Length: 86
Image 1: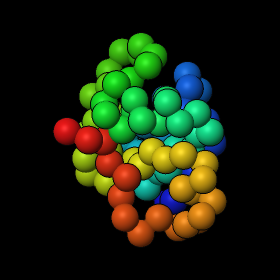
Image 2: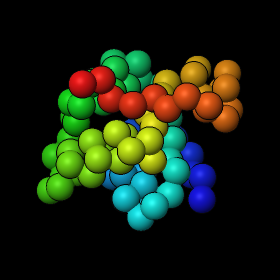
Image 3: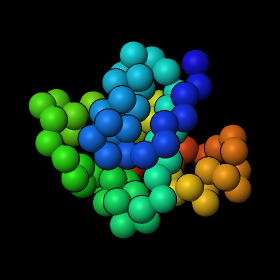
């Protein structure tokens, strides 16, 4: 299943990570460019036990993508994964 989650804060990021971990393809979209750049670099701005590992595992497997709203609205269907930088 393909799921888009708007917002990558406490609710959106955790929800998106859990959906991706369950085998779905998830895109987390946010308007905060600073937050998105931090997430792409692997800097998880919130603490939830196990969240960092789940996000990293699923972004590297292309199950979870993180992007700015402009990227999502300009492409609607992302053909290239937006994975975290190493």
